Length: 129
Image (cartoon, rainbow, N blue to C red; front, side, top):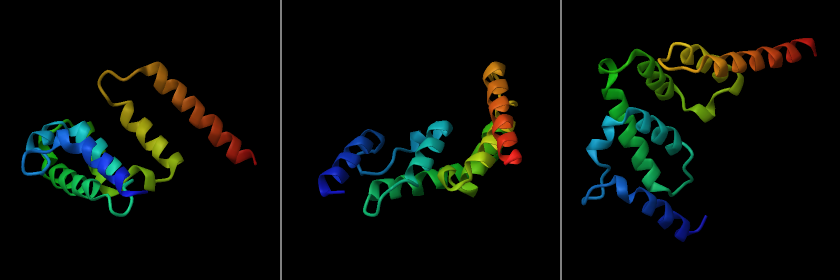
């Protein structure tokens, strides 16, 4: 990664920063966006200070919002703060997410049924080998 790539990353985040170069406090109102930024910040390369700043900003605000949010979103926040998504085992994460998704308002039951069917087929394949 060269210095120009790092400058490009900084440019992407300029819209999210105030005139002092800090992340705008208003961003903390978008909890789903904060979760996405928190997860993305864990994919930073060494020297990507803007993503380090993003991780500090999002983790601080996500830890502070505990009880004032939807219970399902609260579980997602706690889960993310416990360990970033890309550090988890995919199979276990898929099962956890299906359990959470089935409780979400507006969930697509056909998608959930298909995901559960796929999960079970894969599990059966592993068990028979």
